[in-house]
Length: 52
Image (tube, rainbow, N blue to C red):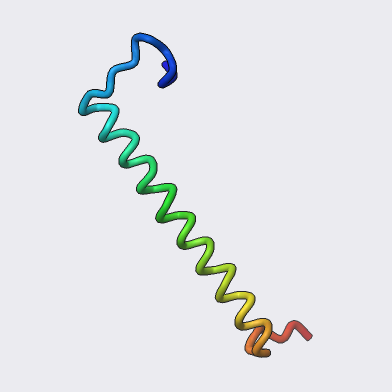
């Protein structure tokens, strides 16, 4: 079922599923963005690990 199908109905089940799905995607995206940002900032400031 796709949203452009004529049988699509926005009922409570769809709102809960898609709300939870987008909430999860946003939380994971924010976490990954924070990790990438923190890694870049640590590398630029020289606080990164020394692998010698």
